[in-house]
Length: 326
Image (cartoon, rainbow, N blue to C red; front, side):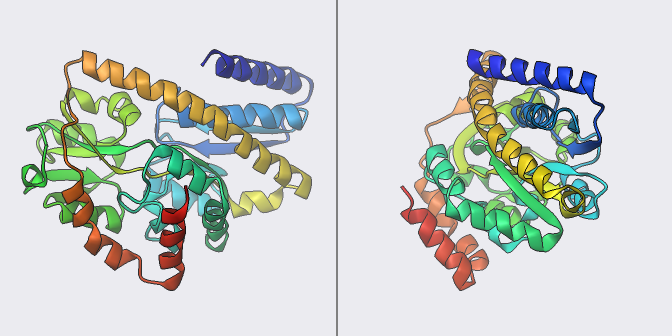
């Protein structure tokens, strides 16, 4: 972790010196729903520092964290229109827009985080990034989203029977609604920022997310039962507005793309450290972590979800290629 901090400090210092000499000609506005300091926010800041250094201060990135520019669904549209230049979003909200994003969003499609990295860093990941160009967006890089698991305010979940009739928030994605329905629970799509109060007031029983989000959102305060079923390992994606991209010179386009790619290992190192810190924090706060769960019935329950969403030959081939990836 120390070397990551050293890299970040050096990049930020270099960018500050460059900016002091030459004012930014282009400032790219970047959106993220997560709070300041969250690994994805820090990674885009690192990308901005790299860009300032490599362009002698001509190109800068201003990160608006904590959903300052809106929730993910709204910021996607703003990015397509060019109001927002850069956007870090989970793949889930893109499922109804870009067909290819459905495959890495499938429950239990990845065997581990390492498996996900090998897939998304290779030709399959590039194929998915390329698909954004038909939707007024440029796919730049994939970040980690961790393993998502169910948490709730009512009781420990150890089996599908325990989920029956419970209400869980999901991202605004038809696939995630069907995933929750497949295990016998009721899905309630809603913006991330409304989840805390909705659990607190009983509008929903819980939600599903990764360790850092469970922590940073404060959801562990109102939903103390966290079941590590790890039903999703969904990557997050950094995209750029095509309108903003087209305003850059070809040389600067190359620099933006490379800085995004170079920010990925920074993000992953920060993510590992954040996961550990978040787990330690919520355990110390008294959350009950349920690990004695048989995932087999959950995986078997996803067959109808795959049948519904993996329909084209292109997507069926992608699933086979992912399953064949070591």
